[in-house]
Image 1 (cartoon, rainbow, N blue to C red):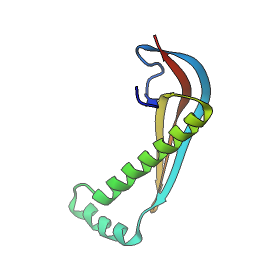
Image 2 (cartoon, rainbow, N blue to C red; image 1 turned 45 degrees about the vertical axis):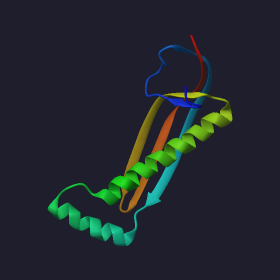
Image 3 (cartoon, helix red, strand yellow; image 1 turned 30 degrees about the horizontal axis):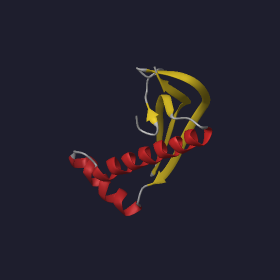
Image 4 (cartoon, rainbow, N blue to C red; image 1 turned 180 degrees about the vertical axis):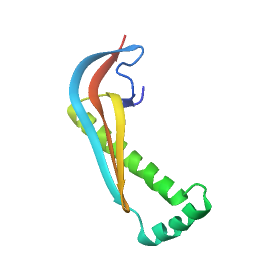
Length: 108
């Protein structure tokens, strides 16, 4: 097992939860580059993937997960269960929250 297992389920197959540390989360808010945004707006006219926005979303989610993991580790957890994302976009600002329940698990 990795040093921090993260799952979207409430349980981990083959493990039992021996301690619950509570909710943990990682927040990230990023703004888009104004010049990049102008170029990406043209892409919405012709269609297709907007690579700059995709990368921004990916990087923002990864940062949020990393912050959530750090909070869980600080509490003594070795896993996060019931992990979810919440995100919002307003003008050129993307916000992502990764959250779940920090737990300590042991192999059965």
